[in-house]
Length: 355
Length: 267
Image (cartoon, rainbow over all chains, first blue to last red; front, side, top):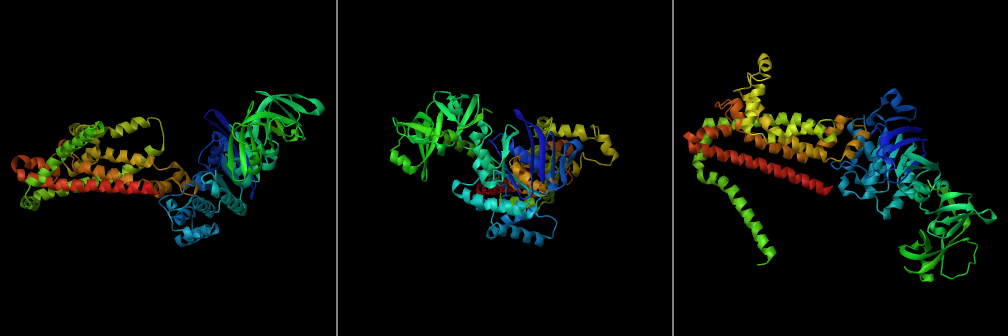
């Protein structure tokens, strides 16, 4: 079990977190840049001493400011994968790994380093310098380096951010396999909720130094605790004022015009969150036919094709995003500047506090 | 002629003036020295003594500078502390200090009547008019060149790499030796070469602090000045040798800087 509690003054706000991760589990700390994510990792690794806090791992106390205990990073048996991997440019991949393997005779250290590289499928690159490796290969070498010293906990800073989009999903699957095989608590930080959901068993959302929601990724996506979380998980967030409406539904008068109906109960200033893939677009003037209770007139501002999907940016009273299949967009003959009606169901509409 | 064409001619003319002005005296040394005179002067024991003393003292000074300066520069580059700017300014002051002032300052500090003079005398250390004094003078004037370069070289090392070394089980000393120094080596070599070049050419501070005793404190520049009035060809020949040695040092700087640039391009 990796347990961390820390309070630390940062620029403009105070970090105040308490986290714990069981062996073999992966907790992702997700939040925008500047929320204090990397600071948490640095505190866990011993690279930063917080104003107050306690870090323990597997029964060993690494930091306890109340008792004046603060083990330096080299005595914490922690594996860290830095954002840009931080491989030593003057050493070969193998020597990068050897650097972290302590204690044994040189030949034994080299053998263990080679084993670690083999396990990550980069044994053949042992002699190469980091500059000659691709992003994905560097990530594997960095992982091998962190794992070769048999750490009691693994910390990863934006593990996939340095990879191009093409390699990210494959590297993600690979990483998930490696992390679950490691059998130690894994704490990773990322600004990308999708990455957090793909890699972690649990996600803690960090905003301005505080964890504002923690849970399994699906639960957070289905029920974001606030407009901030909804935005982070990729939902469209509209602001407005809620009141009790007919049939036990909540009606939200949206800022900038229009109304939204939700099955959630709320009153007063709120945010409405809905996912782009739950929005249906219809040509203007179509009479309401289906079961969707929300209808907003909007203009197509932008269209971005992502393979077989199209993300459509809409301007109405507030900006809105719809995601359609490319085929539907073609059938509708959709083009920027077109007037459309965006519809979606009241059951797909979450009403959440405005932070 | 177009406006930009005229400007290009102006740039070329400025470079030509600078080049001729700086290169001419150096070429003249070799033109005025016949190979025979050169060999004769090198054959004379006194010139050889002066040259050997110069090389020994500057090498010794450089060793002191590198051994003390490397960790000092690392600290300046990687830690922020109160009064850091003041410390850096003081360390760089000898760069702009006139050599005569440096000599007087050393006398005032370490001379027989200086503030540490009696303490040094008690421990039996004599610097004035001794070879050790030459090394002290060279170290004083040359160390800022190394400190500056080394500090810049360490500051350019990505702190994340040092953090990575720590999380991989390396203490601060091992991170310094295995990561910081190898990554800063190009800048360190360039700084060492510059400091060595400065020490090799040192004249004023050495003269004032250590004197110009043949075979004891008379380094090559002092020997050149000594011969200048009495034996101009010998002075010229020794100058030619010193110029060749300095050129070699500068070339070493270029090579060190070159490999560093190469290393950057590859990462």
